[in-house]
Length: 310
Image (cartoon, helix red, strand yellow):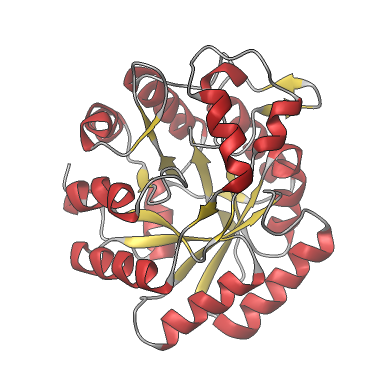
């Protein structure tokens, strides 16, 4: 991994971990998602990691029709790199999860690098008052759901990305996922530099101890050498502490309401831009430069927003 001075901030606007009733600040409709994405970019996020939701009830959606209004507004009002999820929701099939990637041919797309337990049922200990009838059952089901990402699934997604000129935000929740990525890279199925998003703190994946982060860094350095760019995703309260630790070790950082609803202990963030602003201030206080979207395209060797399908 190369040494960096310009730090890429990725902002994950909304996602499948949190449900609408958990925060009044979580964007649900297309206009809300687009507005928060634009504000996050204006605050300093070079990359917008994007999920869509059904505007009727906030249910996670991979329907391309639910993406179109958001993508059009982001492209019109920003220069942001957009990374569209292929994770969607763990209960979806891989074909369902891939629909927006096939339709829109983005510069980046996320790719989970292994099957895993993907559990967020413990949120029921904190949240109990739900607006929509799907929220509580979805959280309960996560106790007995395997997020399927087999080698066949990964190869299929990589092939679709290669045909589209789409590169990947490789979401690695465990040491084995680094090995899986190394395996794919050795076979020539991936194109460097690899954008490795190390995920810490989700039940079913790697924890949040600093030793976990250092172990993942050592493993990635050993297996991937200089052909990767690292980023840290800390879930919940670990978002900024682990992110800042990673940055001092050479990583980029991901923040956003998909991964954490919080800005301080017992205080919810009032927007995605709120988290980006705090991360940016911390980085600048450490004398790091904030990467623009143009910088991110150069660092990750992306195809450019003129070549997307939306």
